[in-house]
Length: 182
Image (tube, rainbow, N blue to C red; front, top):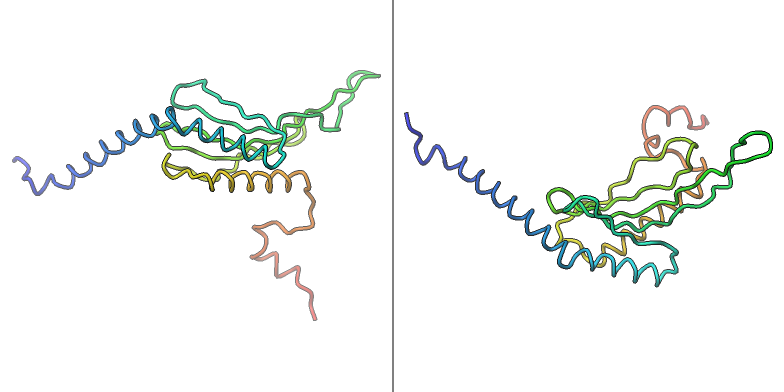
């Protein structure tokens, strides 16, 4: 029994949508190569200079169409050290954090923050995803906002203390026990 035109209409729409998505991937990759990559680097450089932020902006292109732009605060001595032998001390290195614009497999741009961490001192936090953008959605104002978010998060990491309650502890059973009885 052959299918009728009415029965296959929905399937045809899905195939058309699939082809459109594949075309978008090619278009997004082309925009990244021809203009967006350069624009992101220029904006990050301009904003870092304007803010007096000491950083390095790197292009990473290990795999074609999975390129990334990384604004990194570099590495430094953490001030912590481990004894090595009787008279020696090995400084633990601190990775100061980075803001990443990573091209995804489908040509969209993932923006994420890699938090600072000190080697051999706990586990690094997983990266924080800010957003995923189609190339035409990534505007200059967003790049500024990403840098502001990055600086806020890195500063909070550096200034860590336990004065603030955990964000996921604000509601729930624990609150009932912390309230003063009058």
